[in-house]
Image (cartoon, rainbow, N blue to C red):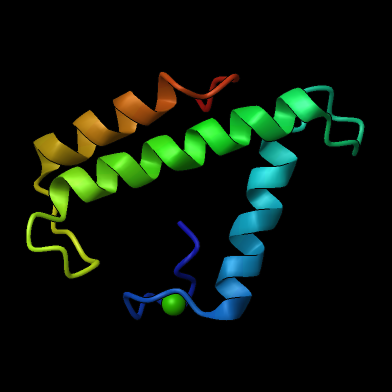
Length: 87
Ligand SMILES: [Ca+2]
């Protein structure tokens, strides 16, 4: 999603863009203000994503390869945690 140059890694600039996206997405009132419950929702989402990633990173090398079924599972699992709908 934020691997703009598609090199398989996340540069600092790509990381900044990801953070901008997350802050904007979790600002439920869309008023440019990030409330405590928005921050908590974001933390829960990030921790859940981390736990999910770790569950697939069986060799603990910081990378995973997902087949289509695993990708769909991860997408649906994480979407269920979001306080808003993506699609
Ligand atoms: Ca990249």
